[in-house]
Image 1: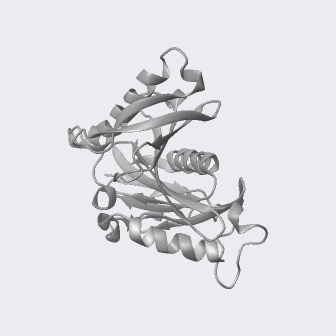
Image 2: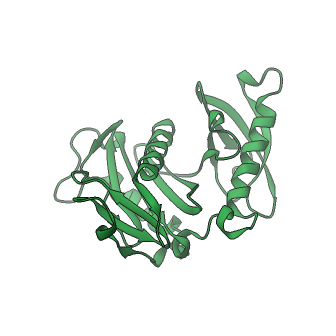
Image 3: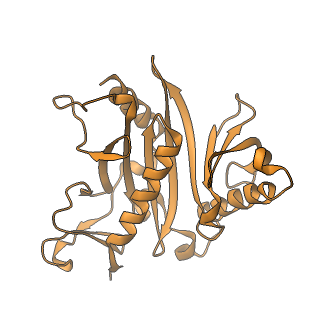
Length: 248
């Protein structure tokens, strides 16, 4: 249970201030029979009946849990996770303009989503140089103003790059995860920070994605970076499958 309490404290510190408010309405009457639905600033999601993991809230999707790669009920103080809690991964999502801002494709601006593309382009440019299979360095923008920081990249898996910030004292993400095959148009990137429990490092990662012109933020906390990346991909794909239409 120590892991869960520690992650909860970290998330309380790292969650963006804008994520404290909400802008959605119950829209189950616009969904297929038995489905639960919400309208997030014009994005209508319908979770099929029988899916008890994805609980839609006023600001997105409530916390979910995995033991290793297996979905499990979210642990609580009264019902802690069985097995090794260091194999536990937690994730949730925030949805809507009030919570995470408007996607660039909808707002007509080059903001956060363009920033993600610039990160991906910087990584892929250096990943294509001779000898990069053994690892490479890249100067990567770490905020929308274009400030660069030096990262050392290696392959965590065959199609998953992990970049560690060279300057440990600098601000911003300490680790960047990126799957090159996701491409530059909709790159899948996780920006991660790390802290430590008494037993193992705990990381907290954030991914932003554009879904039907709406921005969605997915936060993942765990001890295995590659697994957290897979969880983020799964949550994003599931949410896309729940989109019924852009609500009026």
